[in-house]
Length: 128
Image (cartoon, rainbow, N blue to C red; front, side):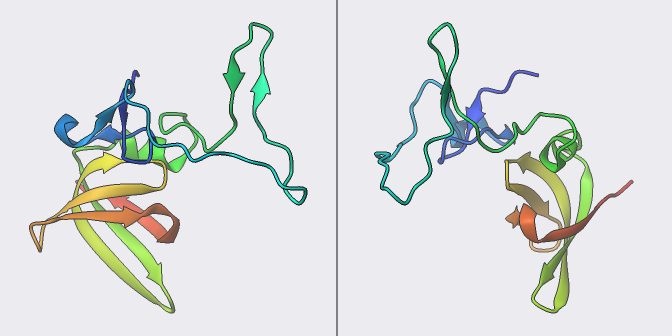
């Protein structure tokens, strides 16, 4: 599954409208990287053919990760339950976009688009 859309931070995105996304041809802002004596060496490695590879978060489409599961369910109605402090909050809507650490719901009740933090989600139910 080819994915050529990235969000404003340069992370791959599945779904969403192309007019709101930048393309891979545009280079996102990358701050200058420097190393102080307290910092560990960079995780970048160079392959035999001279290309530079960088370790980082898993690809959004890689099986076995939550964003990949959610991406397979874009367009379906879902109920997401979040842990906020000592209480639960739930949002129900149509799943319209998935990123590495977030997803976007088209909220039924408020008729708005809600970006949800993947790290505070406890349960996601795919509704019939």
